[in-house]
Image 1 (cartoon, helix red, strand yellow):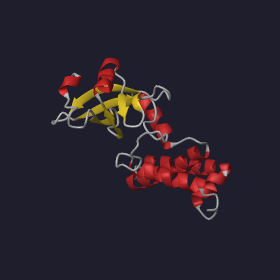
Image 2: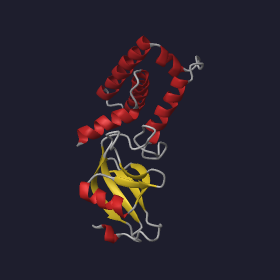
Image 3: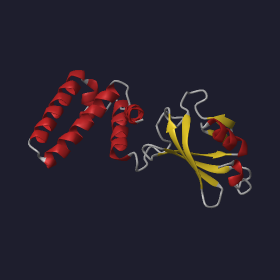
Image 4: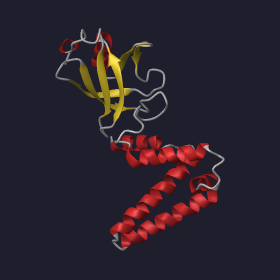
Length: 197
């Protein structure tokens, strides 16, 4: 592939770039590239974009959150590219893995993590179970131990309904516990992605 495979005239010199995590399939961001940005991407195998406000930028040049190119696929009209990448960190300037925090690939865990984060920021919600867990380290640790033990029993009993329920309980209590320590679900996803490589 070369920059000549694209029609930059349609978008006044820009093409649309849809950037996707090559491992998870999650859409990370949508941006633009001009001929210069695309040529730099092809030459360096790291994503470069053209921002309408910032100009030419190398993703991760200052943050370290570079995006290593796995593949680039031009669309049928030649005015967009699907960039499959391996990210070295969050794609979004807000610090999240994806700019689309509520997209379906984030799923229920992403939504649950967002609810936990909201409870963590609302110190007045003292009647909230999540808030009580966030405020009480010993309760958090106790509940993780209990839920892990209950999951082990369900696994030993080969009780699929209880396995699902206890696994969900353990995931919830784990997300609360890591949030209380300042660790996010995206931090955990990043570790898992690195291990998968």
